Image 1: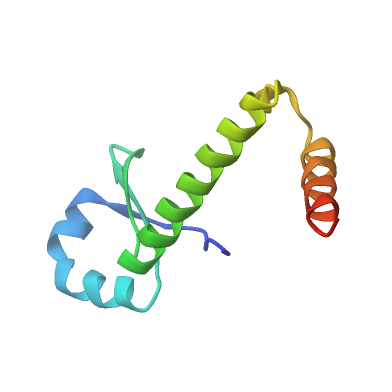
Image 2: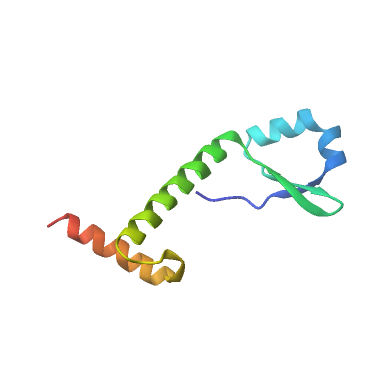
Length: 94
């Protein structure tokens, strides 16, 4: 899933333009809500929320599987993770 860079939007602009923002959200726009120039919230389309939730569930399951095999996921490099995934896929065909 490719995540677009969120467009910053102030709280006042959000309040004043909510109807139009909902339409742009429906078209896939992402927003980073700022209050006093500090991020306080993110607005994303509902479909993207579902995709992110699914990705988070898959990540949690993968981390649990790695821990069950004695690995600490936080210490593995991307290359090591890819290697583990490749080994798991090649073992499925046997």
